[in-house]
Image 1 (cartoon, helix red, strand yellow):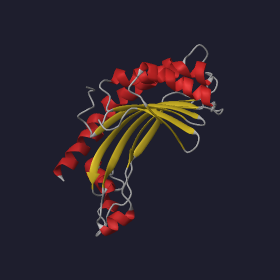
Image 2 (cartoon, one colour):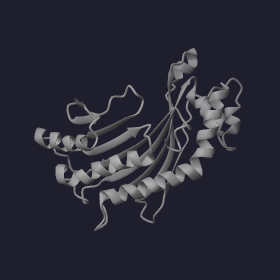
Image 3 (cartoon, one colour):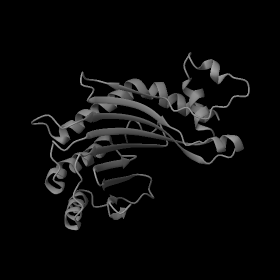
Image 4 (cartoon, helix red, strand yellow):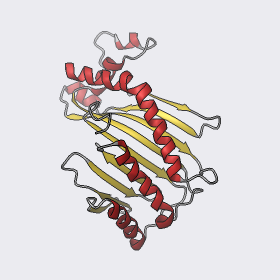
Length: 247
């Protein structure tokens, strides 16, 4: 079990590689690629096409823990929801990136951006924006606005992105995503939906010479995990979980 399994209702690690050129869409190429993925992970048996150009291979979702991989027009994706271990998810991403040059003709030059995302979902029936403001605070500059008589928070999704190199090619973003709208706040009718916290480590541009996609992904995953451990677990995830538990 991952060290993050108890911090949220769902935890996942996704990898996305955005390319400058369109990826191959020929039937034989796509099937051969996914057959190689399935050979490594035989339980990935559900294959389908969405939006006429996006191809997806995934495990059964009924158990709440599953792998998935996708080839889109200009993006290669891989993800695992509630992985048994961090390495279980990262090994899947390594396989996808290891296969990409041979089966999908992806060159180290053909990289718009590559990122690793650590995601945390909390199921909550109520105003997600108000919940975030209560759990995390809004900062001294905005506290008085939040205290306005009769005021109700209808949009609050704090995020922060920092660059870690002089060229701003390597970036880390901590962000939140709410799924509450003004109509729900006005009527007081809420569905139980997912409130998400994301930590994304991303590198833009072509890879450096003699650097592979797997090596780049591993560095980004290490960076994302360091941010989760030092800046997110105690500062965001646990306060959010405590606030939900009190509701």
